[in-house]
Image (cartoon, rainbow, N blue to C red; front, side, top):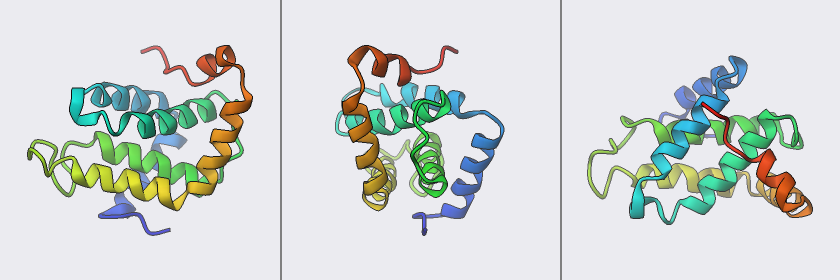
Length: 138
């Protein structure tokens, strides 16, 4: 697995986040940044999918994902929330392109794993899914 950009750094951060139980804090940070108005409108569906997957995994409801795929998803979410990455977020127009590229890479590279999660989601009742994918309470 070759994560885009300075990927090794983000993969290590993702491993630490998972090992130290910091996934809920990351999910809340992603939600806060993802609420950034129209500039994230195209990302909302993809972010929602990745957040839901991580929340379901964190709650122990969905564990049918490989460890490398989970680490890559978490690393992409870490990359998304980091303001200073390859193209800092404050650079209008350019600052979010690298975030989009990393998210697109994860969605494309781990398409099979994400399709399996989508199928699992569709088999859940709306009420159950709402609980499983709910963001942690801060």
